[in-house]
Image 1 (cartoon, rainbow, N blue to C red):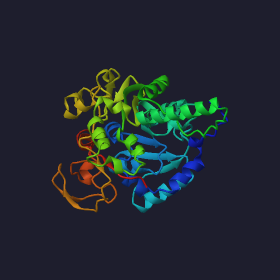
Image 2: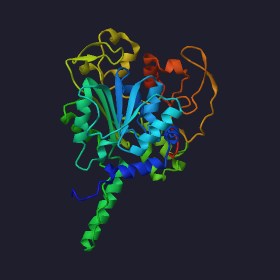
Image 3: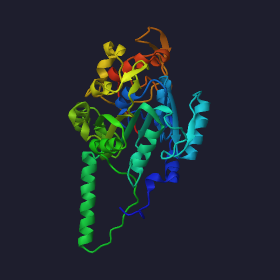
Image 4: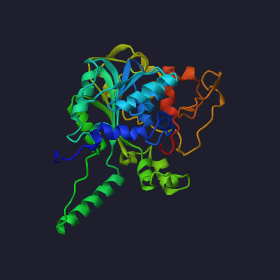
Length: 372
């Protein structure tokens, strides 16, 4: 691919303009417009500091900070960072948002416990190696990285074949073929895993997700064709938790920066040998192996939704609820509603590590809303 092709995916002005049309509130309210939350909730580290590199308008930073997770957002759009810091202060969040480059992060070597990159590394024309190498540099040995990119879904595959066919016909007819600006690559789970492993990570999970999104694209992002009762809704509802999830719109990798001794994912104790990763997808210490939560991290235990998507519901008003964990009365969150779980949980219990791990593995209720 020629270096002369304009890289729209790495144009900060292009992204600043895109974020200008949206708000942190609107990004939060779209909820599971992009799938994959079951992987994020399951694998985000509960101890130490996590960075979301390429945070956009910060919806995941705000979401996970409500769970008591120490998380910071970074983006290369200065205007987005300004909006985020102002919005965060106005709404009594205590997150810091940093302007920066994912290939040159303002963090020291081995300084953070978790790293999240959602739809970022595919925007590098030359390939994703530089941001992956930089992620490994800043992660502590034993740190966890979560990478996601667009997958070569069935919808993308068909569209690419049609586009290639049109180009071929034009060339046969002697017509000029104009190259469009580059925006992003598409990586299958296998391809993404290979890129991450090539930079020295141990990949413990490599999967596809989000079978709903290709149908959303086909429907012009209106949601009209994914209503309950439609074939598209039935297919995505019944196949998202099956092996066919690999044909969804996203590729997701969970990777560990290896070390001889690691922090336990469940209790944080620094006692876990690297051999733990033979049996588990995250480090689990001997003491925690008898916990009920451990079953969710046995190798090949795939994250799932506990219920079908709720499609484009109205935004819920604040309401009174009783916590299913502690029995206390509480009010739902005005922005995050019930945090996408089909179990009632008060703000205090939500920050309890064992409770939010339980919620993240057993009670995820996906909600799809139009973006914007």
